[in-house]
Image (tube, rainbow, N blue to C red; front, side, top):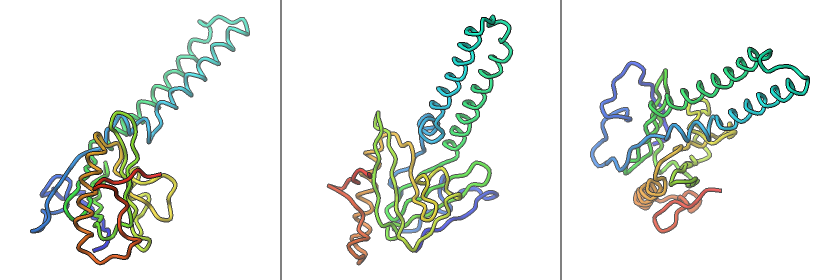
Length: 220
């Protein structure tokens, strides 16, 4: 079974985050969502954007004072700049919140399922037998990303999964479970599930997922 996607715009999910009820012999091991605050800072870079507008505002204030003008005379333009910065940061935070609320990551005994999409929900099925490797990228406070690398012959559209993909890997998109609280524990669940499932499948050595003591190793 290869990676596949389905649209659920008009359909109700029989099970949250899944396109259908799990077949006999497949069990749900974990389900969760990305943290919207981490999405906002690490995917949409709202902190950097806020700093950028702050620098622009500080520069305009310094220039006004250096020219001997009163700040009151430039209050309108300064407020406009501050308002524009707040609007841009707010829009990106709202987008991160919407993406997080409409995304569900599911780990079963046989696959990873990503349900994502605000306007048009899509479900991506990633069977373990079709994954070349998996790795964890840890951040602070136990939050991290889990990177999944499909086999070279399995193509996944970058735009279909954005932002749940590795940045700039357009030709061969690598799905990511982003901004996971307690990511190490989730990686352990995934690593054990992949080991149990792929251990029963005669795959070449290159296709065995990278793992250590049942836990996925840190990705570079």
